Length: 353
Image (tube, rainbow, N blue to C red; front, side, top):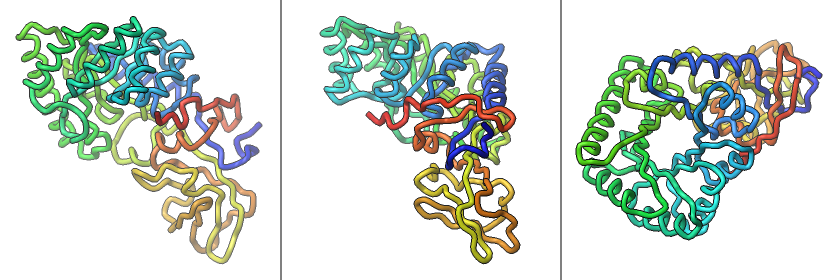
């Protein structure tokens, strides 16, 4: 079957470009101490996670406990939840899951550490912990070296828990287009994390891992000789939000849409807000990059004079944000040269708890 024979809107990934992106990220990290722990929140697809593991990833990062459960059921042996798990019911699930895979989670609060220790002890499992350090995103994380050291000491004294290192994610640089500014800010983050590591280790607590980085900062973070894990995710797909970041990865993800109506000076396609992640930037319509468009729930209207497209013609869309777009769809079609090879279930879709 050809991609233009699919019922639309249809989410597609070019498998050659996908594998090329995986290989390229590995190449960018080659020679550094950093290992790739790619983020599942982007693709949410077990076939892609398997490709990443086969290509040398040390484990998989995810955002949600539900995603971790999907990964563990598929046999992923090393999983990081790069977030805090604080609700009692979720902590019980987390402790149980730690008996099925090597499981790491982030913390930034002493009461959360106490609850995790109690649950892990009751379940007779071990939970590995990264303490999150705030490096400019103003989201989660402790803000001083003293706070960090206090939590690290608490973890060392807690049964069922093992302190592993630092979570330091500078998400504010994920789409930074000014290269010189990005280099300066990455260096600032690296210097801050290096100082934290040295401070902690000088007081007798080893820091085994420093984890973080995004697709846009992966190579710079790896070359800084501090980060040991790179959590990049979007590199496998790319999207319109990265178009000005000058990254070497290929655009492998697209949506096939169909022209369902045609009026004077416009065509209407069957892909709207319910099929596109619009939180970062607008999508790009191949062949209509400069046309004015308008959006509704189920449609996009594309305006212009003498539009040649007819009813049932296809339009290829580059999503504005790959991660939130993937989370909308149930399946992704693996393709090659416009030929559909396989239909992959997006098993991590909707795992918000």
